[in-house]
Length: 234
Image 1 (spheres, rainbow, N blue to C red):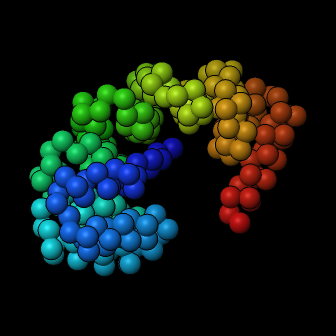
Image 2 (cartoon, rainbow, N blue to C red; image 1 turned 45 degrees about the horizontal axis):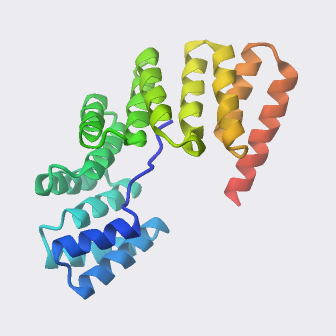
């Protein structure tokens, strides 16, 4: 259950980068417009803006990285990889570029490369909870559940109490895959306590309840998951 939590920088971080890289007012405006368009899913508009910035400032790792994220969201993985590689060549300490490339490698079924990149993120930013969760998700895909749990637990330890829902959901899902259904219910319940609208947590907890023959709880969680899923599609 790999989630892209940090594909683009926050606006505040962008403004800081502009100052450090000597962006002109026009390039700064192009970057902000491209950034906002990408977050809204208007990738063609975003690409147009990032293309202009790269033409003006070919050594802007932020533009290469964020254009790579647009390509990744568009399913153009080969082009995304070229851009992420370029961003990393320009700044080998860009944790976000490594994290996004790790996500891309996961989508490309290149698990070894993905793990290497997530480890690099943790080396550069030891408090990056999303990197720990991403590493754990890849471990789940490789059926290395105990190692996955170690990384999810570390993410939960680092996250603020109000932000631990995803970590607990990941742990609950892992226990479900492992066949430890009572532990799955426990951790998924923790996730739901923090975020009562966490649809996936209800989905996985329903599956655990079914395995435990708790059919009433199974039905309740299934109904809740369906209701929340319908709301999210509106």
